[in-house]
Length: 386
Image (cartoon, rainbow, N blue to C red):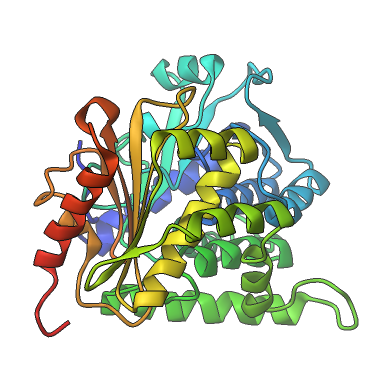
């Protein structure tokens, strides 16, 4: 079923109550994100796992591959707090009672292995979903009544909202601190990373909630970080950390950005099949996917409107050509999700300021000509005064 905004506060409260009840009742949870997890996804996995540990529950995080080194601090916090992290084909515990699907637009995008497929297909396993992707081709994975899917700057913002709801139940959780430094750090990582410190937000509602939650958790982090330590103590410090390139990432970025092209409003890079394969071989899938997002950001800021990157996915991963479209911080006229239908795209989605979409390789006989066509169509959608 297509994901839609929760209609009323009363309905949202019911879903939150259901999630809190299951988090209290069940003991063993497996946390899942999407393939090629980004900042918000990794941070949401960590934040919700830490929240479960506050309830003394068993939490296991599944990742398809090791994460980029910038995010190792989140996994280190998880391991220190008794949260297991498993990868790829690692064995999955047999006693899982619930799956928590985070920051994932639709079931096909869930990072999984054969054991997880069985859990997803088992009606006896509770499926809880927390996500902020609306529109495009986003559909529910979680059980009805257990999906906190709502407009927000990030999935982590919704977890921050859950922290407030947990904390208000003093009689049920009298001695539990749902605003620990580690939870604040994880939530802030997702909030500032996914929205580029709020720059990608378009609607007044998103900007208002971003302001409320980022300021609240930034204050918590500052208050709970010891002085004269090297620990991150503000959302600015977090943002600097997650945006820092490794040497390999910088080399990959430099190779890609050299192929920049420009139309009137769009700065873009197109990587042919041979170029894409060489980059995957040299740098690996996760690094290339993360760098491609940074490339799209840079292209958008360079032209002050839109940045686009197109490349062939690795043949071992899928048979798609991947596209990532980003909006500059100052260009808020166009909600990028609205370009998908006019382009005839049925496999894609994202946020007002950033979307990704995929086209089958057989439908792209010439990636350069195909991308030029997309660029021309998007140019025609940009308001004249923009």
